[in-house]
Length: 316
Ligand SMILES: NC(=O)c1ccc[n+]([C@@H]2O[C@H](COP(=O)([O-])OP(=O)(O)OC[C@H]3O[C@@H](n4cnc5c(N)ncnc54)[C@H](O)[C@@H]3O)[C@@H](O)[C@H]2O)c1
Image (tube, rainbow, N blue to C red):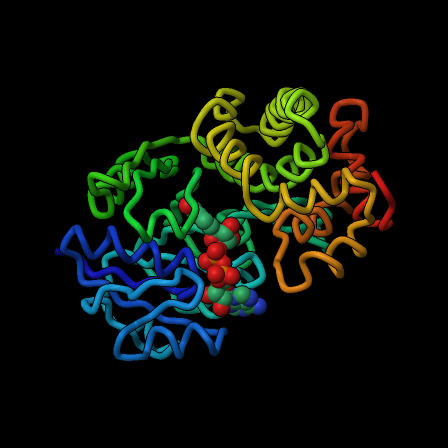
């Protein structure tokens, strides 16, 4: 029995607690930011408003404070959205936490000073001195995991033994884990698939979408290699695995559909998806200063076009 702390009580952090508890770990969850999630998790029935189900009573909730890191845990899981990564980096910076960290967050960050793109694990290491970071990615809709639907994910760490140790801690018969040393490839592909899901969504019919799917895979492979990842990662769970689930459903492909119908991003957002977070859009704005300047647009025409139309609010 291990002690696991989950930081982030949104849909994914909460769903992730379910296999962890099933594997007989002592699981504590904390929420630093969102009042609704704090209310959900601290209530007696633990009804989660995004997942629309009651979380296990065994799940312990604790209020967030920096003191939480003084307690001893075997694994700390970061399940915040990309906007929360700098926050948690700052919190951890001077604490020299030795506990292994597992990051579920998907995304990339643009470092304005170094004019560079950083994966989340590099950002935590370079800017906040946080080491011993593993990442977990792959096709996993939080609502499906929470219902214990069969889900396969990949855990990456250059030290594969650490990834496998985490796998043992968290996997169940419905939550299966694979392992990889290609941390950079896994992080790049799991982030950019949100943009390509939007691209595929613009297709408007299955033939055109399949064409865009195939060309998106080629561009993703190019970008994985460009950032020094392993090109074969595109064929894994964090590559086409995650692209598939995002392209056939979800908010990014839905937005892509509106773009394909001739709406600008701003108009579609206002009219059809005013309350939805579109992760692909957030990532597009984050990485555009790097991608549009540094990478030959002939190598990645779909990505290039999508970034342009989002940044300049133009039609496809
Ligand atoms: N690895 C996986 O298998 C997997 C699966 C699904 C989602 N995800 C990723 O997990 C992350 C969270 O997704 P979710 O569905 O739980 O989202 P959510 O909107 O339900 O929850 C977001 C979480 O981030 C926190 N947050 C948001 N803005 C913040 C800020 N400015 N400062 C601090 N905290 C902030 C919220 O309080 C909440 O805890 C996303 O990056 C998503 O892509 C990973």
